[in-house]
Image 1 (spheres, one colour):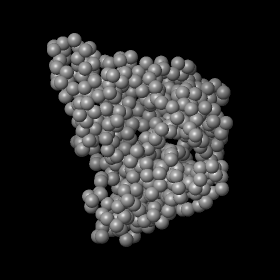
Image 2 (cartoon, each protein chain N blue to C red):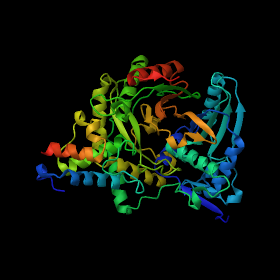
Image 3 (spheres, rainbow over the protein chains, first blue to last red):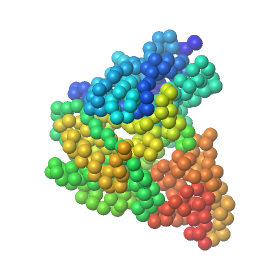
Image 4 (tube, rainbow over the protein chains, first blue to last red):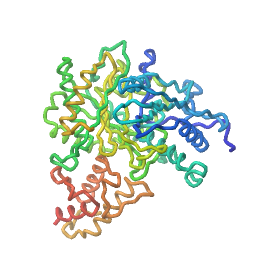
Amino acid sequence: MSTPRVRRLPLRGADLVLVAMQALWKREGVSNNTLMVVQCDGPLDPERIRRALDRFLDVCPWPSARLRRRRPWGQLHWAAGARAALAIPPVRHQRLGSPEALHAELEAELNHAIDPRREAPLRLAILDGASEAAGPQSVLVVTWFHPLMDPRGGQNLLAHLAHVDETDGRAPWGGAPPVFVTEPDPRPLKVRGRLGRSSQRYMRTLVPEAPVSPGTGLTAPGRVRFEQASFVGDDHSLGGVRSTREIVWRLALVGRTMADLWRRRGLPDLPFLVPVSVDLRPKGEPGATFGNVLAFHFARFRPSETADVDRLARALRGQMTDALRDGQLDANAVAMEFLKYRPLSLMLRDLPGTAARETFSFNCADLADFPPALEKLFGRRVVNAYHAPSVLPRPGIGVFFNRCGIKNNLVVSWVEGATTLEEGRRIIEAVREGMGWRTAR
Amino acid sequence: MSTGNLSRLDPEEVARAVTEFINTTIMARTRPVRPDDDLELAGLDSMALLKVLLFIEAHYGFWMPDEDLVTDNIRTARAFAAYICRRSA
């Protein structure tokens, strides 16, 4: 196959925000990895996965690209050489003796920071045999440099690899591959400039002063840790349809657990500032794989306002409605596109606390549902799947929801020094109780 | 659309307008919904729901309060239309 000598894919929007946030901690060398963990009902064949990756590179080079910036003021981009020069990202295979060993391996994956300037921005691992009770199982771990793609993108990549695997020997997608990246905003520069400036003005008014977080004051951050638990239980309505399914309700509940943490730590009753990511992909189809196709809404509330979750959820829904009505979500997406013209050190200057590396109070996201189309993967049935993103030393903690089949997964990630395993477990239990979930078997 | 003469709203026409809004601003071009399709199954999340509520506010002149956001009123574009017509009668 004939391909150009170098192909380039610019980092855009939320990709740049993620790069800039990690750059705040450049000297500490913190990880910007994110993990997708897929538990399968039998052993996976690493060779089959390598073959699928190899064939995927025939149509899309980005899993093997390198991060480049030709000049300090140049555009950050993914660069990939001609097809013949592309190496398959690593697929590691390891047998483990216990669930504890598996968890340690997953945390090692999270902390072993990918340096996309020198290595592929993603790697895979197959970890076998961690559960004695459930028979021979494999866990497929996809680890990537977060600015490469968002959780839905990670799932899309897996779906593409599964499709390539199923069509082994035939042309995948009938010879017409899907689009892997989003098109640039077609609106004129003048229009986008006006929106971008409106977003800047809005962001400067979000909170009166820099937020605090569990990571405030932390100068020597430890490792990223995470705790995951699976639950079952229906979403239910509390004064509105699907209340507990709504991100605002979940954020309000997590806010209440954080307020408890604030009280225990004696942190001040300053307004929480929490970014809420909004997937910009059109609904009904998978959409783009590469790039974080996200805009951000910024929720604000005080720890002292969290006692009544329903009431707080209504207030947060009101904030989100106002932001949508005022066009601030669109403006945020547009403003982030302009970050490509800024050096890394200035990308986040519109946030109130970045000079002191204070960005947000905590992270909270409802990550993509694992798609039913991925029930089977490389010949195995998927038993469960969840995402575990790393968090930066500030805020130092994040709570992440996702769903796979009937299982509601909850992941708390934190940085050692910012908080503890005990706090992580306490948060999981408080959220479980608030959601009315039962532990999944 | 004018917000006058709301009492004369035609449920079919409103269902068509809501469906068209959803298809042009929320759904992928290749995955349009029909008036009776389940919107949650079609992939509409809480943010998409808010967009529909803002569309109703802009075109029919009222905001759907939280207590009315029950499945019977929002499961499909036609359910939205029935609610809008009831509110406007």
